[in-house]
Length: 333
Image 1 (cartoon, rainbow, N blue to C red):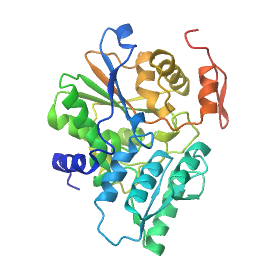
Image 2 (cartoon, rainbow, N blue to C red):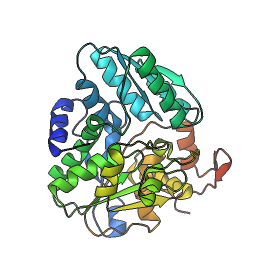
Image 3 (cartoon, helix red, strand yellow):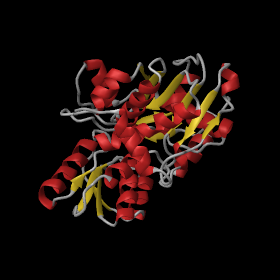
């Protein structure tokens, strides 16, 4: 499927004044690593996450007369779809698995969408969304494998390079590839020499496994601090897999313990409250898996997490993720 910078530029016009122009601020941690480290604060979006960009663009592009929209989501895409659908005055049904945190489920409902809880994986939630398309005539808004969604997410790449043409590297959380593929495509069309690194957790990272295999593959989903990065990419993936394979320079995986410390560092060093998925770039830097070689921007993708979990991590307490326990540690200890 063809994809172009023109689609991203058009998306920027559609979402202007609602979902664009989030802050790019220096991190206090930059001095520690001897290079400028910048944080792209997508937590400032009206729904608390970057997903609004893609959802808003995709729903704005729909023709008149649509019956409604549906999607599968781990939470943030559902919020974006709910917000954009409400603004347009159409029905939205968001399909989520039982792994979705309750805080994210309630956040979607609060924006007026119907929520269907189906199964224990994103694949099962996706099957319900497909049923709604086939049986009720709803239009699916894919969380990642949709040109309009990817174009919306790619506007972050435009903003980063316009604000800082001298960027050496962009660190982008990697899940289904809509964000990573869109940002990498946009950034490299502007500056082919810029480095773009995708980051994910080391348990159940579908896009990372697919790139390593050279084709889309299935993985087993497990609970993670980076729950927003869970889920498959679809064995019939049309666009996001190829964009990530062709435009990411590297994929780096981090452990749950490293994500835990990344979340602590963002809070204690920069006073940023964020999900585990946002902290993967910082986690990789702190773990020595990425060495800063010039001005670097990390995309801080969302803040829609359970605040009880956040309090436990900030206090250095153990955190249970299903059968796995992340051992707590006080920050700086």
